[in-house]
Length: 123
Image 1 (tube, rainbow, N blue to C red):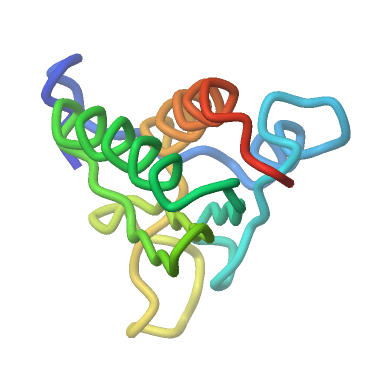
Image 2 (cartoon, rainbow, N blue to C red):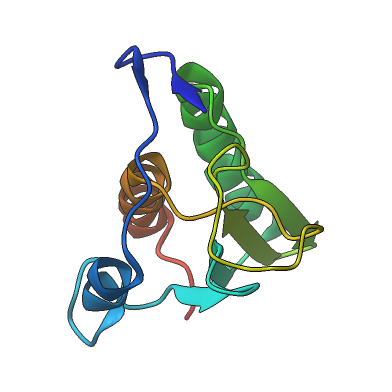
């Protein structure tokens, strides 16, 4: 993945480092590692449909600016976001499972957390 704003290629982040960001009181403590350690996943619930889409608009604008597009699933006031970098190989032998967690995924996850603060999602 090529980061448009930084003009650099994504760098794979080691699993130990990622897990360190997910512990209690860490910046990404509400995120989970899924899909053979290749995805960061966050689920959240908002008070209203309007807040949900206000949040998603912020995320989509940032993702587009950075050239890094998450998988987003939404139903009324519930959102699930998955981050992975598809063009970085992971350690899995499953060829259908491409991608790994990169520095760009971590950066976008931290930005998403800032947007969640603005919209005060209901954990």
